[in-house]
Length: 249
Ligand SMILES: Nc1ncnc2c1ncn2[C@@H]1O[C@H](COP(=O)(O)OP(=O)(O)OP(=O)(O)O)[C@@H](O)[C@H]1O
Ligand SMILES: [Mg+2]
Image 1 (cartoon, protein in one colour):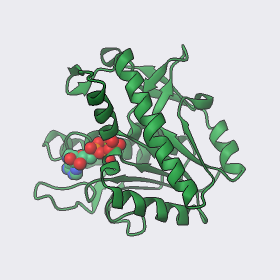
Image 2 (spheres, rainbow, N blue to C red; image 1 turned 90 degrees about the vertical axis):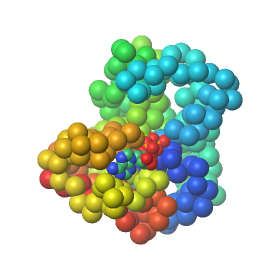
Image 3 (cartoon, rainbow, N blue to C red; image 1 turned 60 degrees about the vertical axis):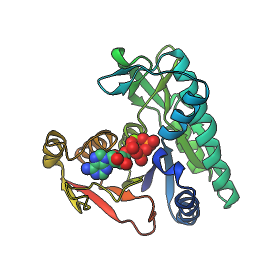
């Protein structure tokens, strides 16, 4: 399939209802001209539900350990709440949206990272189901829950999933929308262009931290693997304005 655009909608933006509304409206418009796969995260919604169920998390090197109970909540938040909400909103705007997880049709076959429990990375992307949907006029909305070789759910970082999907489809564009104006420097100013050779340095010098680390690493890998246009943009200004950071060779 040619000219696929992979868009990742940050869970961080689900807290901002105005940004979300604008995103859905603009994405619906864009989908009339372009073939898009939407991947989404859901950090805040996962945290909300864990609080509601009074589930305490254990952290390993700053990352949440996902046991069976936490995984259940992750799946409820991502594949239940956020996925179905985005799907409904897109349908309201006249889009033929289909909300699925990366587990359906074994889209993302994953290998777990032992020390993190049921957290893992895709080792194989099966494009078939997504291709069938797109070819038949459907708009896939993908939550970042994958599957392992025992058919167990796996919690995948949504940035990593978006990257792997973009690579598998040889996407023309990979766009990350988040709650900040792209990659910011030490003075909180947007860095307009990041060269992939500078990514490690930005992380080592603590300019890029937290949730921006998997995002920039995903961008770097996507550029290395030939995705032509890779951007991290201000999700509050939205996908029409496209203001943020471009990641280049
Ligand atoms: N140099 C940097 N520039 C911009 N943001 C940064 C930087 N370093 C760290 N961050 C943090 O990264 C955050 C974005 O990543 P985060 O994982 O929180 O959001 P998301 O990926 O959009 O949401 P989700 O993970 O739920 O899908 C920003 O809100 C900011 O706090
Ligand atoms: Mg994130």
